[in-house]
Length: 99
Image 1: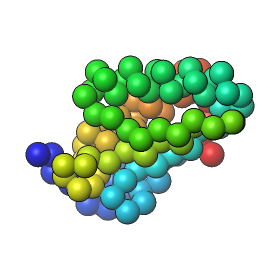
Image 2: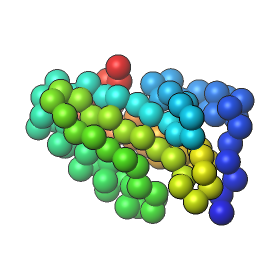
Image 3: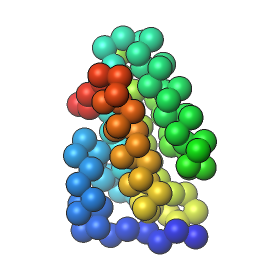
Image 4: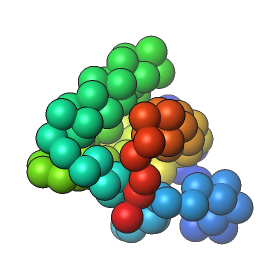
């Protein structure tokens, strides 16, 4: 089981657009249109499969909301931080910015 991170450790990770809320990291990405949102979701899904760590994703017009938590640890772990960084890079790569 992965070790839960403290609030200080999460803050020190400097995740910018990600918010630490309760037992999760959350971000909302403004996609501008539904097709771009679907593209971002597909890229997140591929990254999640590679990491074997799966976020909760909500696709709406015109945004994608992502929630990361490590369920078996009961909170945020290094897996969440690593995937958050990957997701941010994917979003920026297709010109999508966070709220």
